[in-house]
Image 1 (tube, rainbow, N blue to C red):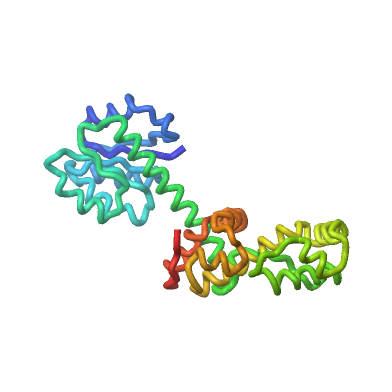
Image 2 (cartoon, helix red, strand yellow):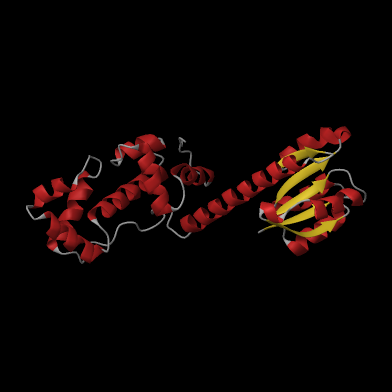
Length: 269
């Protein structure tokens, strides 16, 4: 459940939102309310809400000043509500990164849509934070995760399979190519590889290709769709699917983080 705080000086509006809106249906829980920005700051600090629904014009402290003092440090999503004569404040609100700007009187569908947008934004932040944690836990030029097992203790046949993949991963590979190269039965090679690596040959090939794609992205070598082709994925959508499976985010999100962290690589999609 996402925690919501209402900051609104008009009691009728505040209580109306509290008691007439189905917060549970939006996967939200109302954790508190405040009647001005000063009280709002105290509640934000105390309750750590995920979403703050706030009026613009209030006594003691307005919504814009409250956001300026807290939104960057407390990391919540804000939804602004205001009257028509206050719409000139929308620009300031946008600069502060508010999720939505709603006009009074509030309509049920508008608020639902604004909450959905806020929840989507929260999930995106959580995904990015998860990715950042993984990357920060790695050396700068190392892949995010160790996708490929260590080959030091591999038997001769398994090592030969790994060598074949390392030399040919950028090309189209079918298992029969490996079978023909090594001159062993398909069943024997599959069983031997699975026993030693705990994964199939196809899984290893996909992991190896994704590992190589990560290295290219970190070195800012090309756009995502060209990198996909370079590491042997002929189907771009399949590449995205496999990347998400092993890295837990899309290639574009990974590239966005790399760029934001100081790189200048170009992403696509």
